[in-house]
Length: 266
View 1 (cartoon, rainbow, N blue to C red):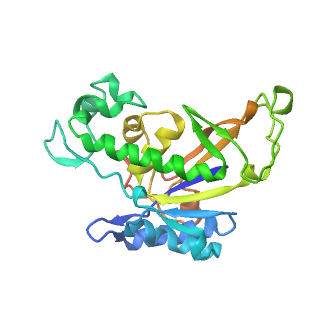
View 2 (view 1 turned 30 degrees about the vertical axis):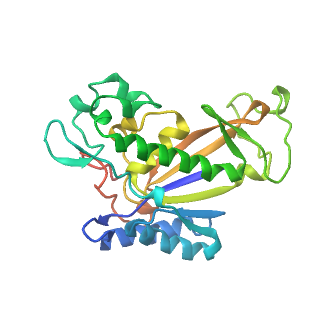
């Protein structure tokens, strides 16, 4: 199974819509995705994500039954008072001395129990909602959470032999497809903050590390593949993060709505 996350295009936050630049990014994204074999698209309810997704949905020729909007895919909403600037804002964009102050912030399971995050109980409530949401989303595709990893049971009833002698043990050659699930692809169009929460849950990484240590530009494409291993136990591996090949192809500059440094454009 493959999960492709797309961040919305360059936004006008005051109207929760795309700027003209964001619309160009969304059109470039649709040119890239038109030949993708997408089984289902899942959307944030917010306008900037919905608007980003529409050209792709049209290019793919999907019908209403293949598009679902979930409220838990909206941008991660808990707010906090910045300990340095004393401004109220989202839970990220902190200064380095603040987001590195407590080692507990890097705990993938309990980051919300420490320091400045502990002071906002909504952080735990909302992250648990997103954690449950993404687990519930992948479950019908056969991926049942088992602690830190997943057990895969093909919903079709097909069973792949998965003993040591049956599976690829080393990454020294191209992977050979073993079942239909290997190419099954879903698309999630949402936001940077909530994407980091989902990635953290699927990969076993604190979202605090992802919020402050990664960059996903507008319409950036992030790809996770489920790797089914011995006894069909599975874990997700990131194959790309915030890829913007479609913007280069369409001669659309990569937006700076992503980081606190110049965006590499070459």
